Image (tube, rainbow, N blue to C red; front, side, top):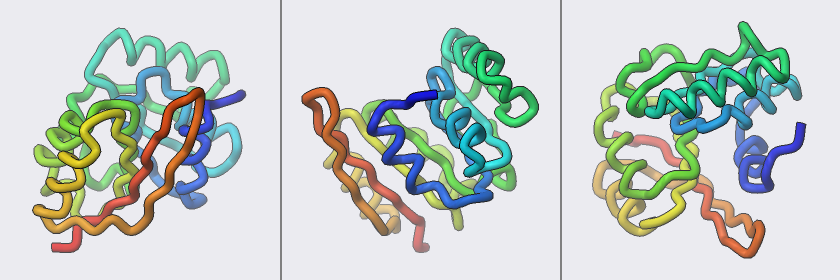
Length: 158
């Protein structure tokens, strides 16, 4: 299985054994790749769109990852139990949407690591994170197909 360079860069930030939540999963490429490569044992692939969740379920079936990657319709993190994951990846959507997801879930992400990859409005997201007690503990820039992607690892400090 081959994944885009930006997803590979995110995958490199996931420690072995992590319980992963992939928010806005679209087609579940990241969690399936991580399971197939033995980085994680299981993951939750969540998306607000039932069509995207159906695509994610198809990816899971095509790569025989049933029982390891659970696909759910969810508007962000709110519907997922805070004890169900260690790291949440929110990638490939606008910074304003990431902000909304994080803001709605502040109680569930305390002590969790967030890996964020906004497509737009990077500064809006960064300003929100700083104003709400998050530290950016790592940043990486990935260049792929003529586009620059910023990947940030954030932790809530307060």
